Image (cartoon, rainbow, N blue to C red; front, side, top):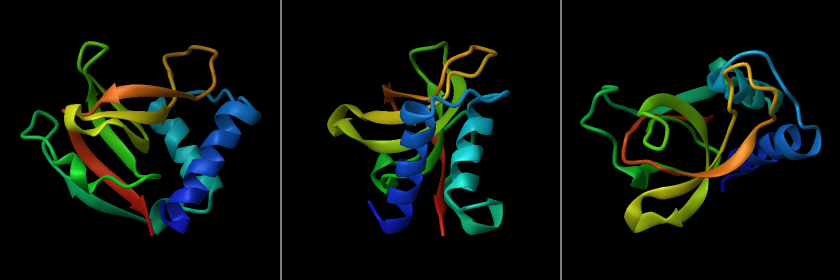
Amino acid sequence: ASAFGRKILEMGRQMAIVARDILPGSCWDWVNAVFNRAGFPEKKRVTVEKAPRSGPYLDTAALRPGDWMYFRNRSYGNIEHSGIFVGWVDAPSKVALVLSYPGGNRKEPGRYRPYELTGLYRIFRPS
């Protein structure tokens, strides 16, 4: 990971595992809080790539650890979800380890989970 990517991943781990922060709102709100707390407010982020929400989807080769991504959550009814890319579990199958927030008014902290990223449609990166 780049130095910026490491800062994002360290803050995400701190919020999810160490502090177990529970925030009001959605997955987007939580990832936004991670970026803000790591020192990357909106003006210090760049859009790396974007595609329509309905596809065709992005090539996952553009992902770097610490990237904020939007994707179709294939394991949960193809809903839109956002999370932080950590690394590959199985790159050929496009299964990645992702740090994300369950949202939906659940009283749970962020978590690390594998997700299939065949529906990747937006990537942001700290700058």
